Amino acid sequence: MLKWALIFFLISLVAGYLGFYRASAATGTIAKVLFALFLIGAVIVVIIALMAASFVF
Image (tube, rainbow, N blue to C red; front, side):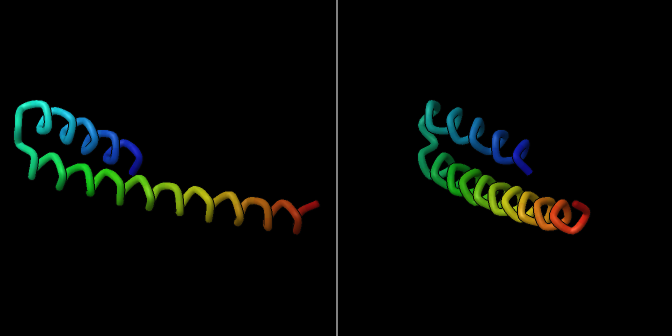
């Protein structure tokens, strides 16, 4: 998911440079949403890993 966020971020940069401001805004928004989902997923995985470690040890 982080890979896709980076791809959309790069598309946003290129579109903004070429003057396609609406496309740049749209892909920038998609990149932000994907990055937020990645962070939420990463936090959930860390919490689950810590809970599992507390049960094992």
